[in-house]
Amino acid sequence: MSRARVGLVLAGFGLGLSLGCAERQADIDEPELVPICVPAGAFGYWEDGDGTFIFAEDGGTPGACTCMTKDDFWDELGFEDLLDRALESCEAAAEPYDFAWNECQQKRQDKWFPVDARAADGAFNVEQLSCDEAVPPACAVGERSPSPAWLLVVLGLLGLRPRRER
Image 1: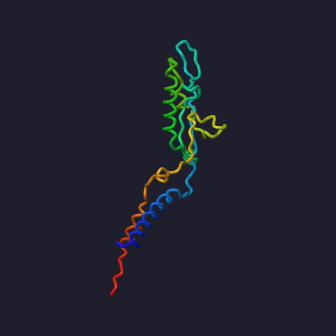
Image 2 (image 1 turned 60 degrees about the horizontal axis):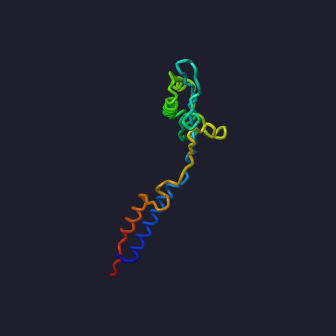
């Protein structure tokens, strides 16, 4: 293989690698992800009837968060899973209190609702979740994940035949 052909193949390979990352970084009107949380506020009660608000281990409100688009939020997509996770968080936070009973299950069915965690200056963000998009791992410095486009470039270059002089 001639030096020119090797150079073209290497250039094509490099171009293919760079195109792969550029394609993934292209912003094609991807919807913004926002933190959506379910603060799982509930009370627990001891056998004597006394009760108290259930606090998480860190002193805050138990709950669960996820990232979703505003459209998914308004369409209530993924709410059941999020509410189930909030229930688990409430039950786990109630366990150390040794209550006779708590309102976690009842509140999960009747009262809890997901909220945009950015509201009230983030007061509802019970997990301190951030949905900021990071650089895709395949495009990070030092990572390689070539696009299929590079293969077409290389095959096209290899398909060039040297001219025969007559």
